[in-house]
Image (cartoon, rainbow, N blue to C red):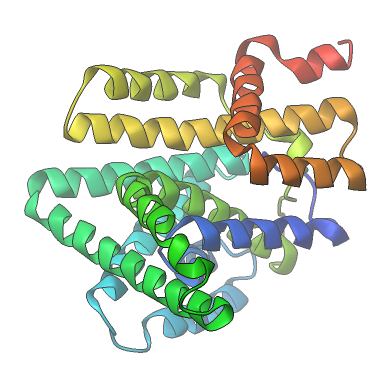
Length: 308
């Protein structure tokens, strides 16, 4: 997902798979739509082999829009996919040599800004979106309960998890724009990998996590969000919360990249320790990564570690 360079290496598919799984885990929007809609835009507008791109675009568009809507959420998913895909294709056409991550963040910001402008003009539509998202989340919770009851029995630990799951769903309802932005960024990484891997033209590899970094100026987005959380209320507090969650997640990922770069990667034992820490001490571990990533804005640990 960081800035690109040469064409994808043979093992690059693992990073693309990881990004796809992240897109699936973070958002209630289908990862197929998050990947498919931007891929269709790139295929029509930015594919090195024009005929092959048009054919791919037609196939992907048919898969996404060929079947009629099954619910109101069908329109929301594809509407968001069009916004992100359109912005990403436009930025790629305008600045083709700009690193992927810059364009990916720009596409997510552009899509968020466009959606926000629409809801400012038609504020009642936001209530419809919130209702549709809540309905999708509750459907997922009901499915999870049925699965746990089938696996553990109705009187076992499944019911004990109900309160925790409901709290998690309530939190997700507040921060789902930030989660959607993160999922969309991950999906765009998959799209860019597909273009670089199969287009036959110039493409970018998905660089290792050790090289993950973004513009230091984005710290102002995090600070503005923090001000919104601490000093505002109502809608502005919600906007600030989502900005903090979005940028905080990117900084935590950047901190993990710094750690991996300085230590030369994780051994099997180190990976197990990291997983155990995320399971049992997630706030502490993620908080440590965040502090390291935020500090990297000013201290540039990787450059210092190389002694340059």
